[in-house]
Image (tube, rainbow, N blue to C red; front, side):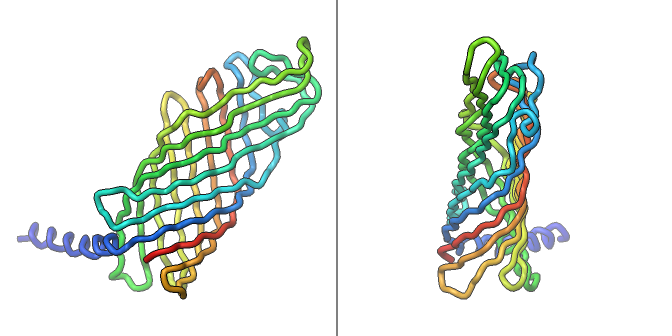
Length: 264
């Protein structure tokens, strides 16, 4: 009898969640400007000294952009989809002496670290409507998989000790699967707070990309809901013998943006 009551209670909690998912059909599109601060170091090869991206390569804080579009639909067995593109491209000018990819650079040098990437995320919504019995509060969770494709790499150009001017570069373009999770808490007056993470670890290499934000959404228009967002993003990347390259890089900073939700 106790088990029956427990199962009945769980079923009653799932009903509003299923109803909320069944009724939701919308497209969300937006973007933000991210004041990203680079830190860490890279190595062209294991036998070379690590190069600090600020002191040795001259990289500074730069505004980066992020754009996204996502579709939430009412078909439970099919995942929802989000596509996003992040520009993460830093250039620096420095005067230094170091070795990169077996090339001895010396004097005035130019460096580039480009970790721009495109994400395709398939996810399922959880807990939709499960908190409807709590006044003024709405909780939403998402779990899924992200495939991230980098379009960039590392490059150093300038004078060398023996070969005049030269350019050495490493391209990063392989797709990378990441686990994805998100949690958002809706609050009164159109506000919400949330966070999401994309992360993976394999063969000594690691990726962790965490975003936390506050949103305000104006709900006074039918089917069209504009919103504002502000938050903080932290992206960490460790490379362990990826194309004979090593690195431990971080990019952190605040962002501000806007979005538009169309649907119901």
